[in-house]
Length: 103
Image 1: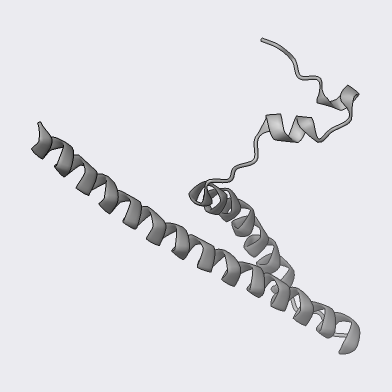
Image 2 (image 1 turned 120 degrees about the horizontal axis):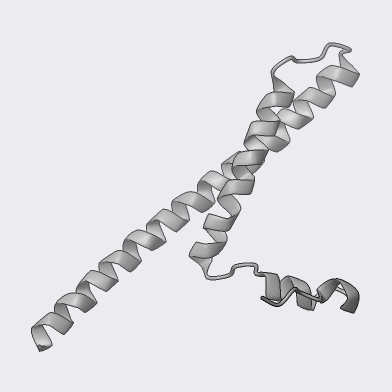
């Protein structure tokens, strides 16, 4: 049995390394998406109000980038071990809002 336990611990360590690498990659992609959203939005504001010529594609691109950021944040938080939950949200609300239905 010690051989099986040793093999399982090596597999678990390999899975942890792969998971850490994927989480780092997801965080990098998340930062790139946020930076692109900021840049595209800033360029749109400059073109619309500074040059009086709106870009036709920038609003839609900023919207799609923002949606991808919204989908990437939970994956990044899950990989970091910190997730938001209904319990933690309800603890921060006033008493009337914090009541949850019991099933």
